[in-house]
Image (cartoon, rainbow, N blue to C red; front, side, top):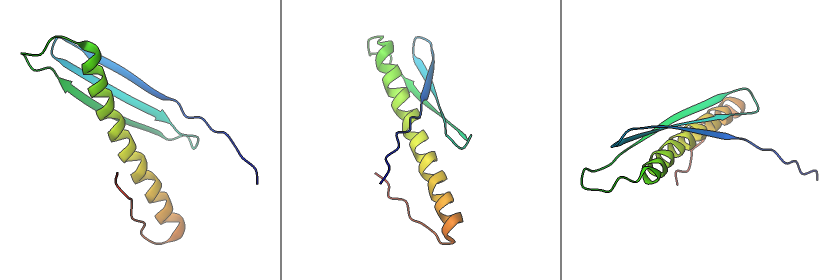
Length: 91
């Protein structure tokens, strides 16, 4: 049995102001497909200004959306190849 190592790179970019953080996530798949997602975070006016925390929340939301899109893509490919409907397990 042959083992292959494959790597994918996920890019995250942030846009921020004093109260809002937006994260844009992108992964380029080996088949040439690009999957993109966005996440947002808003600082409550009583919270201290901690840009890193806003980035973490916005990034987590973007990566979660990216994961859901990739699951949908994979199941569509399974369905197309098999001629049946697959059922994704949501975690």
